Image 1 (tube, rainbow, N blue to C red):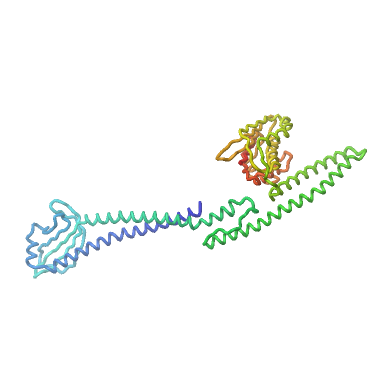
Image 2: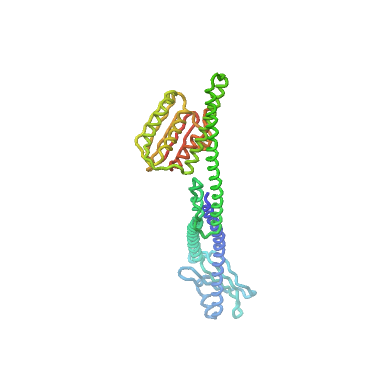
Length: 434
């Protein structure tokens, strides 16, 4: 999971938790505030009534119909004044919620009950306001509060995601340009990625420092291989000449002659390894020019003529199904080496009576050349390490594991992608994507 996604999820979870807590507090407080507001209104009405109380007012309230002596037409509030026994003691106002019936309609009211004495007579005053309007207001407030909270959450999430994307953009640029897109330390770009974040600056400088060390070691390794290869070719040539001269010695014993032949064979194999390493080193050091017009179809035809005897010896069914004569600019000798290594492996690791098929196609404006065989194939582990030097798919075959390493170096030099698909005992398919 990307850092940006984790950062956004963390912000989302924390904001949701905060909103839930705050929403619960607000909703709980809303009920308390609403009841307090309503109770204060009832108390103010009670004080106003007592302040303007007179005998006429008392008579007016007492002489109205039954006990519900005053209520508005919508039955949202009422005032009840009743005469009670005179042996009462002083009391405080009590507020409670209760159902009351008014003209056949039952409503829930918030009621203030207060007993008081006026001119030696005791009266019971009840003032009530319906809860229906209050509940409607609370529901509306809850609904709009929910909308506001959800909108605030969405806006903050979008803002956080946008900001995190802006904040982490230099980080992803560093990863892409400094690591993912670097296929050769010698092509590394040491220019710093613009950023105002000190942590990313430290990361950028650290990667640059590390790549300088890797580039130095990489250059030393390539120079060492080139130097050692050159130095080894001279004694190998001298030894080969001496062995050949020994073979020309008259009356040489047969057993000595066989040992000399075996030594010459070993020297030739060693010379082949050194020449392969030199080729890889020269390719990686860009010591070749890419100025020739190359026809893939013609190269494959020439290679087939060179290897035709080996193909016939193993009774391999060779098929070239090229539909296009693809041309490009490169180094003809290197491309010939690349193709002959792939086709040579297809012959070497094939079964007697097997087949080799060379086909092509154009996909997403890219030309793809595929060389398939029905040979022994490779395991998934060997496919993964196919381009590593001195690793081979079949240890029983003669070879030194440099064929595909050479193929990879030449392909990189020409910016050709190599894709290998293989399955043990079923064959291998190598695609060159131009």
